[in-house]
Length: 197
Image (cartoon, rainbow, N blue to C red; front, side):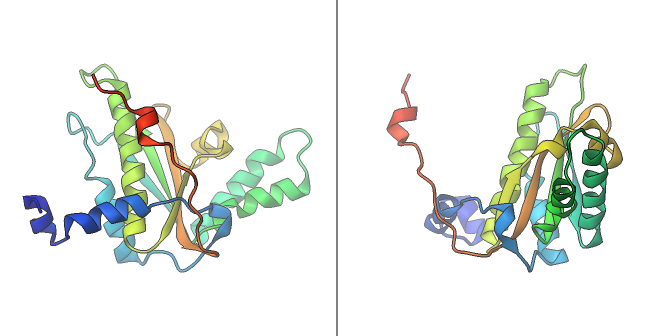
C-alpha cells in the first residue's frame, strides 16, 4: 500500500478491482434513480482533479436533469425538424434523447489558443475529465455512457446550449442504473498492443 492509498483509506487491490470492473452501459437501457445532488457534486469534483497543464481549466460542465432534459429534447427536435425527409418518428426520438437517463453531464472542451500549452494537451485534459467522471459514477454504483452523437456537432444545438466558437462537446455522459445486467465486451490482449523500447 502506498501513501496515497493510506490517505484515501482504500486498499490498492480494491482500487484496481474498481478500474478493471468498469464498463459502459447503453444510454438506451438506463433507469433511475440518478445521482443525488451531493453525489453529482462529488462526481464533478472528481472530474476536475485531472491533469491540467498550465492550470487552464480547459473544460466546463452543463448538467441536464429534471425538466432540463426535456428542454434539451425540444431543442434537438427543432434542429432536426428543419432537415429534409425527417419523419415525425425521428423528431419524437430526438425529443426523448436526453430522457434516456436521469442525469446527463455535458463536458465542454474550451480551448485557449496563442499560449504555450498545446491545444492537443487541453483537449486531452477534457477527455480525462470525461473518463474520470465515468469512473467516479461507477465507484458509486451507477452506470455511465460517454457518447457524443450528432447533437454534439450540430451548430444550431451548440449555439442554443451556450457554446462559444472556441468550445466543443467532449462528451455527453449519461448516468443512471442499468435496466439489465451489463455484459462485458472483449478487450484487446495487452501483449498485442504493447511494445518495449
